[in-house]
Image (tube, rainbow, N blue to C red; front, side, top):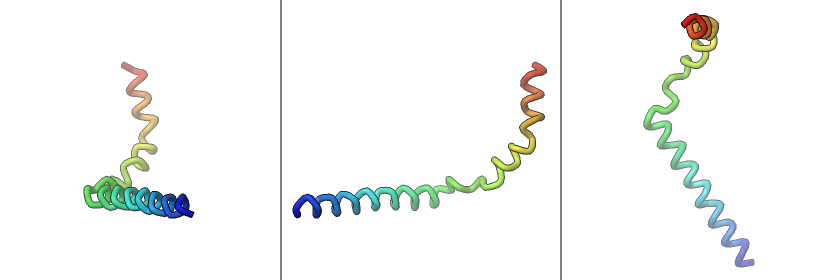
Length: 54
């Protein structure tokens, strides 16, 4: 039974750590460039052509 209490405490600590990391990433604008990857996908052919022409 004491192992169960230990596992509950450890799981709450791990969940709290992930929650803290998520809140930190949102506040420091880690998700700000929401359209950049989608736009880079459209111009991927031009980038590859420029790389091979050099």
